[in-house]
Amino acid sequence: MGYRVVVVGATGNVGREVLNILAEREFPADEIAAVASPRSTGDEIEYGETGRMLRVKNIEHFDFAGWDMAIFAAGSEASKQHAPRAAAAGCTVIDNSSLYRMDPDVPLIVPEVNGHAIDGYTKKNIIANPNCSTAQMVVALKPLHDYAKIKRVVVSTYQSVSGAGKAGMDELFEQSRNIFVGDANEPRKFTKQIAFNVIPHIDTFLDDGSTKEEWKMVVETKKILDPKIKVTATCVRVPVFVGHSEAINIEFENEISAKKAQSILRESPGVMLVDKREDGGYVTPVECVGEYATYISRVREDPTVENGLSLWCVSDNLRKGAALNAVQIAELLGRRHLKKAA
Figure 1: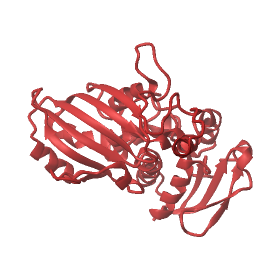
Figure 2 (figure 1 turned 180 degrees about the horizontal axis):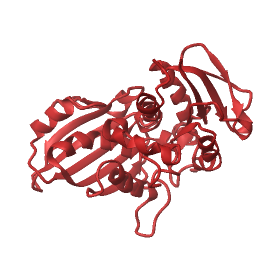
Figure 3 (figure 1 turned 30 degrees about the horizontal axis):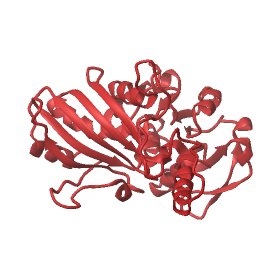
Figure 4 (figure 1 turned 180 degrees about the vertical axis):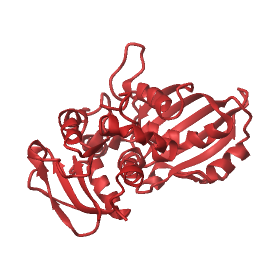
C-alpha cells in the first residue's frame, strides 16, 4: 500500500520538478493530487514523463483529510494560509517556503546532513525545506565538519535566475533578446539589468546591510549543521537560467589537507567530486542541470589561515535546492515514521 501525496503549487517551476522527481524515483504513491491557485484549476499537468496527466485542483477548496503528505511549493503566502489547515487534517506538510524554517517547533531538514532531526515534525506536523543556496552548501560542509570541525565559513554565491521563478527566467531571456535586436530593456523582476550582468542583491535589505538571502544562509546553516559555526555570505544573481554555484572558504578547528578533504568528499552522500587540476576539470552550472548530486570542484588549501580550505560547489537549484530535497524528505518521512509502503 502506497501513499496519497499532494503537490501544492504543481504548475510552478518547483512544483513541476517535484512531480518529475516523484516519478523518476518511483516514489510509492498510490495517488497524486496536483493542486494550485484558482487560475490554474482544471488545467492538466503531466506526472513526470509517465504520460499520466493530472487535472489541477483548486487549493482554496482542497480537502487534505485522508492524504498522507503534502509538498508545498507555492510560496510563503500559500503556506501561511493552507499548510496549518493541511497539518491539522493529519496530512504532514513538507514546506519549501521560508515561512517555517526558523520555527523552533519545525525541523529544517537536509536528509544527508541532519535526517535524524525529522523526528521533531510531530509538534506541528510540518517539516521545512531549506533555502536553495543553503541546501547545497551544507551537503558539502557536513562530512568535512564531522572530520575537522568547522569554525567559520565565508561564501559567495552565483545564483541562477530560476531561483526567482518563471518571471526571472523570462526576464533573462527577454533582455538577452532585446539587447541583440536593439529593443528597450527595462528591468521588471530584478532591480537592474540581469542579462550580461551580475546583481549583488537577492531578497530584501536588512538593517545591517546584508540581504535576507544572506541572512538565510547564516541562520539556516546554524540550525541544520551546528549553531557554533560562524557564517558570512554574499549572494549574487547571475545570468544563468538554472544552477547555483558557490565559492566557499572554510576555516577548521583541526588540521585537514586538501587531499584528505577530497577523499572524504568522494565518499560522502549526495556529493559528486569532480576535481582535476586541468582545463575543464571542474563542474559548471550548465553541467549540473537535471542532476541529483551536489558537485564539488577546486578543493585546495588556504594558506592565509590555519586549517583553511577553499572549494567550488554547484547544484541544480530546482532539484537539490528545492524539489529533490523535498522528495528526499518525503522518502525519509515514510521510512522513519509513516511506513505504509513496502
